[in-house]
Image (cartoon, rainbow, N blue to C red):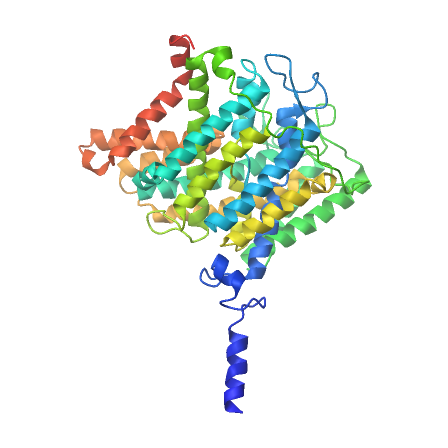
Length: 496
């Protein structure tokens, strides 16, 4: 009897709180128990990440496409991308790549079309080349990143970054995603004149959607502070329900110049239909003809810009997410770093090949990490939902950006805790750290913050006679960033 009782106790103890057996196939594949997580927590984290970034299926088509040539970014040949087609390939690419990342890198990070690069393509690139040619440049950028990752050069550059700057990158990303949340929710807006930004409208919160954001932020903050399991997910769902009820009563509608009190991106109302058939006509619609159309030098400068933005945006994001999730060591290194960097590079290749723009690790993954996700199982869940979202595009619009923004601000606060890892008593450390942190939100770019931090770190070490503290690769990268920051005048001087 004693032996049987012992076996029974052992069998029960060999299960996680969600019933997943320790040492089972799922547990071994994703190292769930080893990382102190549970299958249930990973699923919740995957759900939260999806809801926090599902807006990309709606926003990316709005940036890249339209319903006609009159309301879409048109290229040099007058071509344009259809919104429905961009939405379909956005969900497809994000789903496939996020699942691949989860299985190969075993990290709870999700990939989707990067907002910096898609905006750059729509605003600055297609005036000179066609859409297929622009996507060809994205593909080349991805191949270069994959090459550096496979050869180990990308990991070497990652390892050359000082520990203090890696911590600063995490803090800067925290401020950046919080700022994104504030702006997307209308909590922070531009001013007609005077200061660059202001609270709400004229210094006051005047719209109901922004009030819903504040409600969601406070609700999620309380749940997380009280350590409620699934706090972010509960807050997202509860606030979405409130938003649906509010919209049903007040009929606010979509926001715009003629309706400043409306919802910023999607209206929280139950859709008339849940299912739509994805149009995947954009698959494979890329071209390498940009080098013939605008010349090798001009095309190379565009690839250089895409490469630097993609390369260091992703490196900074993964550093911050790994530190937030307790997956990184004191130097910021995390498990399967080389695999993660390779798959992230593949994201740019897939983005170009599908015309969804370069896909990269999304900083919004921090929402799932904040929920407790620590393994690639969360990414598989998120990726699966993106694939489903291709068919349920109307349903993904139910969660308004104002609600998702609340989760971003909460997670930004979580990431701020990394500041304690930095000794700010040495001003040669404090200044690069400070510039890294503030540049990201103020310029709306992770890569800019990293570049300013790298350059300042190198210059101060040189000026203070501490050159030996600078890794040789950091000199190379800092010089590359100098070129990156003056690429406009440089291109003009070279006649590109």
